Image (cartoon, rainbow, N blue to C red; front, side, top):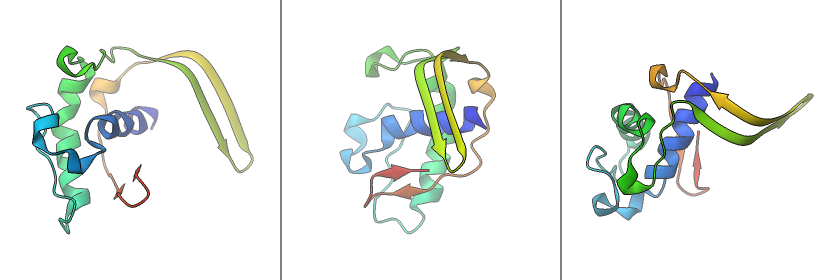
Length: 111
């Protein structure tokens, strides 16, 4: 579960600004059109294509290697669950399977 959430987050950092256009995206990502009725499907496909490139890092775009992914802090506060983690390393990101993705351009959210 964490690997999938983190994969989507990484993808969001790279393509989150859909209107930026192809000139700002790595060659392995094709920009999705913001008014496409199948925007979520397009972004999901691009996330799946980009994942193998992203986990190895891409110096041209300032993307570090995520083998392992190192995080200084992760906080979860949802209902009765509160977790604070520090200095963690996540393994297995290259094997992540992105099953779903939802883009909310109005609120600048990627789920």
